[in-house]
Image (cartoon, rainbow, N blue to C red; front, side, top):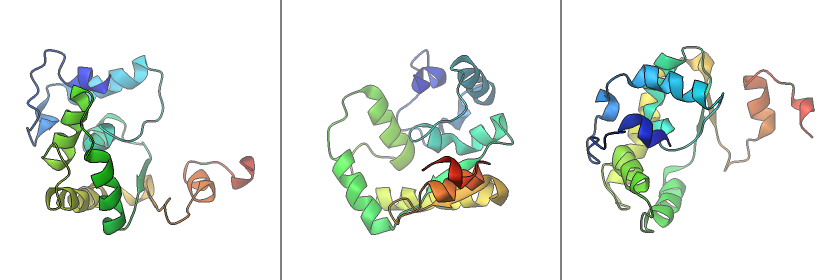
Length: 153
């Protein structure tokens, strides 16, 4: 999986706030997507590495789902309150939230910081903020990725 890309020798420290120090990460991302013959990815842990993805794929399009913070935290708390079933779940939590369990301070803080970082660093012509919970759907996404909305019924 993706974490093998980052720490094949198991040298990644779970709580390291700057996993971007992984040697050759940008070229490894390029190889990862080429090897998988993949043109898209979603969710953890790739969302954490949007800067590196932008370096690896300078013309890539990014969709950032948006959600009201209180609603998001309720959902995240429920999901993250469950025990991690695999080491990569623990890594995801530490990488994104700097803690392994739902935390009423760290989770919202990380949520807001991630949004700010994405909005500051991804060019606006390559970024689509999308409120799926609020009802945005295909008719919002398709024009952004260059498809007519009539293509999906």
